[in-house]
Image (cartoon, helix red, strand yellow):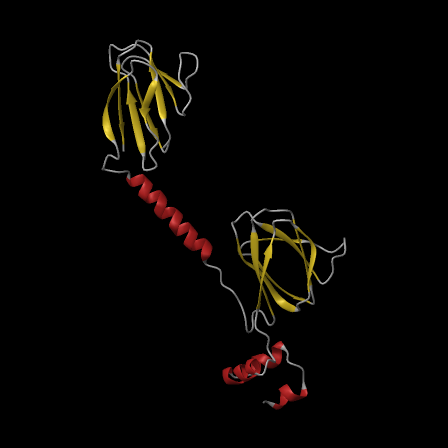
Length: 236
């Protein structure tokens, strides 16, 4: 072991003078602590939960979703001490002896924290998840803009002798259209499973009109003002 390690306490300065092999020997001798992973359940909230771990690196590594949040105080939970709001991916480097964590009740939500010594020297986190998420989102947008070439249920015509379903719910639907042929009476439409009538509808298509929609995948019901006339439809 180097003489300056024997004479002095382990510091950032002394660590920076060590070789990689010397650092490994210190780790094996338990003179350098491994980072701590702490998982907290936020279902009932937290009120100044005290964590007696000293370090200089604190990060909210993971959470159930991006809306989960906590508030952190370092060293003291005094009412005058600042509370740092943390969400998934946020980290801070500062010396601390202990940590106090508070959070509102967030049923079913958890957070995973990383606490470490010698942050920036022997330990750090590079969070590239936001770039990966953005890439995945852009790919989804690209795929959506491409549209589709295969009809998931095709098209057809339905004679509405009474109020009824024009299109059933379809989780694969990307777009649809409903056409009221020339010569028909009014076609009344609803975008849910509620019975349609001439005063209870979302859209009224006159003769020769067409309605085209994107992204809606639920049931579509219709009613012809004149019984037995055909409504035409398609979906992709």
